[in-house]
Length: 211
Image (tube, rainbow, N blue to C red; front, top):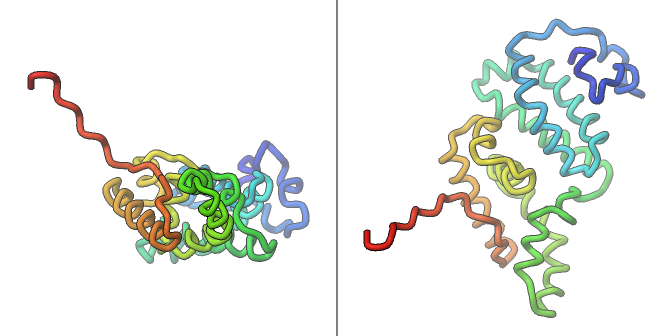
């Protein structure tokens, strides 16, 4: 990225402490890459932040992600699946960092999916079961097919509206809804619970009296 893309107005040498200085040589970026960066840096950073719990860690990982995307830009374009390929790089980078640190994502402990799981369990016996289920929650989410994993995190963890999820991921809104329904069903079956995640279908309008 250009120097002025460093987070919080920091200078490149501050943002890249401990990293190769060659990363901060101004790059001649293709216009389509710059447009992709401007359109996707928000969800990429937000996605990483809900996994790591801090903006600083998210910025560090996503900076590396965009360097990798830039290095393979021509191949990603020629493959005809730019969004899918870019998200695959994001997922791998986030997963590798979590694995290196030996911890589960931050959203598993305090995020909306975990809160929904709390609501789904009420009795003492169920609360004991919850303690076991929570430990496997991320594993259940992580085992979702890639597209289902993405839309679950973007829609229900980050709270993006369906239209925005569709734009970021590069699919239409009906396909987002399809992946969400399939993902929720997989989680329910895997965890043996109804998670209580809100439906994305619009409620039919009620007819007026006497109609």
